[in-house]
Length: 442
Image 1 (tube, rainbow, N blue to C red):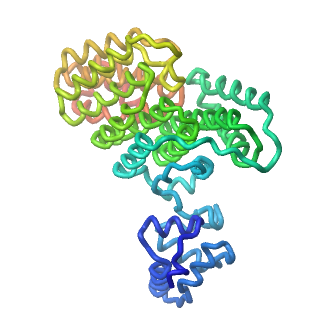
Image 2: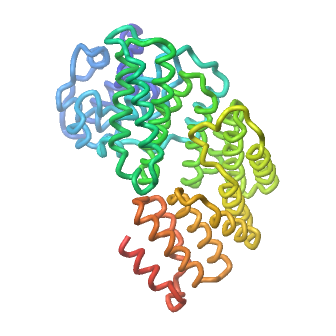
Image 3: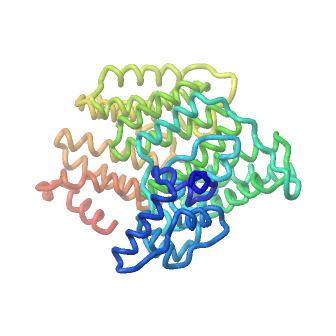
């Protein structure tokens, strides 16, 4: 029996082991699922072993029973086929010398709508464990593929240049570029997995994969697909770890933390950010990390810890640096510090100071950052609401919603919709009716 239960590197084995089940346990659960349907199943540990070794593919009935055991929609089973529908990665894959490609492959599956509905965002404990491993483990040398054709350096340069142009498009244009970015990530992942390249080229490919996955994760996040975003950032973290670029990995952890804040899980954000800050090097990266840590402490009502984090964010923002800021945080500027500090004060009940900071920061935000402005305007509208200025709140929320609709940013639309209950009973105030009508059409 011990030989049958030896872990096998297969999605079914991974899904089973992460749930703490032996092959005998899984076989028993399959038989019980069959009994509930009035059927009989011959599932035994040895048959599970054959499925996990790849020697045998389970028939349709067995896959349906497996889907019931794992809680997977039958439509997903038919759409993806064996073994792609298995929830083999619903907990983070541990970092390792060869973990980048499996993590990226799993992330790329998020392009299929049916698959993304089979899991939710990672739990706080899972994220904290992954962040701890990133903060304490030394990066492994980039694995160099030994099969396939040699990867040409000029081709990698072309991929880098094109990807950079796509990722830095204005927000209104970038919403139409995600399929191109997705195709680039597929290509880069294939080159890492199947090409023959030097360690230097391998590092460039992994850096590019991390950047692409990070950008695509934000697209998913803005569309409200939090599980898809998490999968892409998970792949990005593995690739960043493979390169040894601590600031790049810290940026991915900062994205996870922002997502936790958005999902009203500030304690999870604190846990992740504290690990990220340990190893981040560039002052700009540390500024962003401390700013988000301040937001998390404010959401928890921890004023002293919030003040310390905001002070650190301001200090690092003005600190000199020998190297350019990492791409993921090059946008950070005094406007972000002002508005997010204002948001912290708003959460802590200091409305007057909060409103002034949010308003001042929004005014000086660079024109190109349209999506960020929509978010900031929503914050400003909330500040007006808390002061009882419903007409000004309606005007500002309308501006935010109009902008979000124009650029295709559902997350920003959701933010404004969250303010609408506060306008209840104030339909006669100037602009409130127009806002509610616009919201109904959004």
